Length: 152
Image (tube, rainbow, N blue to C red; front, side, top):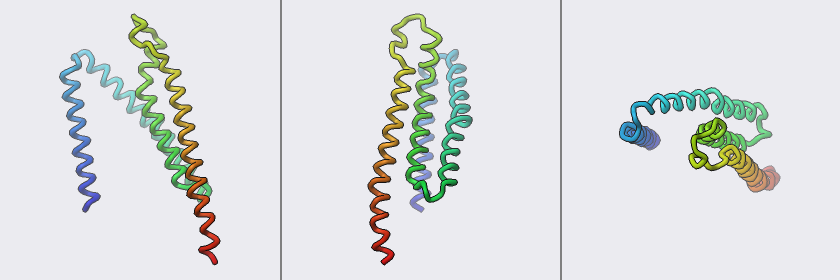
């Protein structure tokens, strides 16, 4: 019963934020901007369903095929990194593309967003590798040390 209540609470929380987003869009956006927002949402859906979700699925499938050689935690860490990287790509891609196209003023998009996204990918990869290394060193090593004692 507790899980069901938590799920209901999460759904209500999500619907409340969806309603808040719709309200803010209604107040702040002009009617001309709705089409652009809808285009971006359709693009985000295509990128998610066409790139991010299949990439995460393939990592899961590959990890499962490798069997016991790859711990489930390592697969989950890589899946999480792919999901976070995909979300950040969706967030930064409009800025990167607009910077490539050009703007009327250089002060509109003053940063090098493609470089920042690349640095983010490197940092995400390093943090993921560090988390995997930490897990393997600490938890797998502990398990290996315990096994001979448990078998005796």
